[in-house]
Length: 195
Image (cartoon, rainbow, N blue to C red; front, top):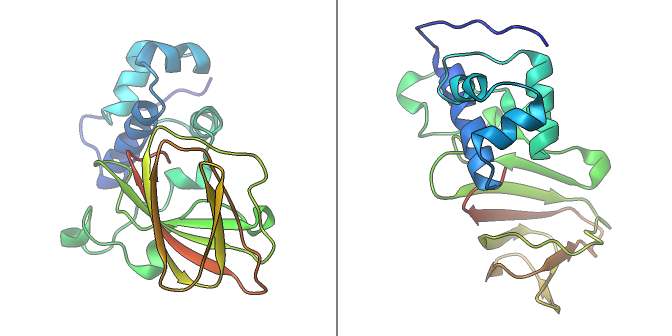
């Protein structure tokens, strides 16, 4: 394994990275010991990473991404040029992308980070994109259809939504699809954060 540098001073990007890793671990209900075992690292090292005292290598970030089921790109793009906006404002051109066009779903994190009690995402569903297998998360979720046609099955019942419509559910199985010829854009709020 690649070594990491331990530095008493950390920049804001490292602090945000540490917070994201901690938030992802907690959202998945994992302990430091479970993460350490899965990564083949010590509990102390994982704790140092979560506190921003050790900086994980690129290989370590790939391992974290695989473990948490998120794209490695989630751990990058913490750069906020205006200090007073850090942790408060996310500019349109600075959103972190969480997906690829090949999957039919591209999500952008609208929240400044993964901390806090909820996350907000901009989800763009390609025409014909569909989640075939039911998903179920221990979360409360809500969405607002900003554009396009979006269908969501919640607890076995399909709902067809158009621009301006919204939905909410908690802990129920769900699937989604875009039956339209245009992309569907949904602003999605998830509590607690899962990315």
